[in-house]
Image (cartoon, rainbow, N blue to C red; front, side):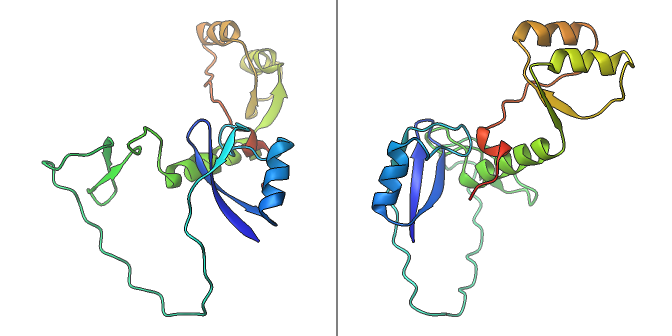
Length: 172
């Protein structure tokens, strides 16, 4: 099994597991390797350290967190964490850290799992629920910018939310 660090054209970093290098190349050529966040098929391998399984060892103690002083220059914007320390919002290239990407993908999957996809009927279904013609339920779908504006003007609360294709299916 070969574990590769991959990156899409949009800069999202993720991990892929393949039987071999040839398997990765074949899947990439067939367009089967896509970014789990944006579904971009322009995937490149990143440098990664090999994983060597040399036997079980005692887990090392976690390194203590270090808060940067406010006078230290930072390449990325920082946001306060629950502990009050600063943590990066994005890396120097403007991309969110992998933990944030994973959290976004998990949230997107939860939204997909708890809503009904009504597709291009979204505006009509939202109106029918708003006017009491059918019971309210959580829905998602597609609407044009014009339809979205009309729904908002009618007082129907909608939220444009681009969901990555990977949120709509299970990863294998």
